[in-house]
Image (tube, rainbow, N blue to C red; front, side, top):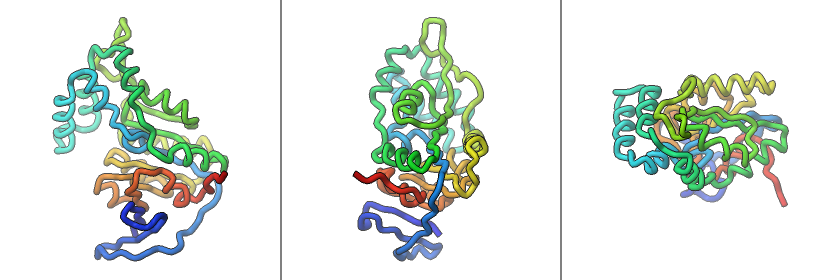
Length: 248
């Protein structure tokens, strides 16, 4: 059963959809109180933006990056190959350009409320991203994220980007490993872990979580998630996760 929250429905209304495509209201969902580990994807989940597109716009390589993305989606490239090719188009990008990208980042509505609600229950909110530390770090620090992982862009001696990725690549498998590592570190049971994402690269971590939430997601992610939220408001996840929202 897939639970859906949609802007076309009344506020807070939940429906379930079966293989027949029929829908019915779900009046009560089990409320699972207690500490939770909530792990979010970054691009189009924690934030409204796709960071690689903002960086490519600064580098003048948007069309090239779009072509690489299309080849990856058609199966010509795996994630690691596509990431390296995208990074190569950013060669020469200056710290000033990266700062301009950072200034364009918009946090998804409701994220701060979700973080506060989870922290109030002594839970953790973590982020794992196929994007880049250079843009994610200041956002995660400002939001009070407990831990985060992302790819890192190599810099040249003058501080500009070299066009290469530094260190291990954070791909789908690494996302799942990160969730499991944080669960172990924080002593969270699997049933108390939550994965929130929107793309195919999030499916592996969603498969190892106790609750998976497709957030304004692609069809393949909706098909595999326990819950789908179709409105860009992360507060909708609070009750689904089973933590109390702050009042006043």
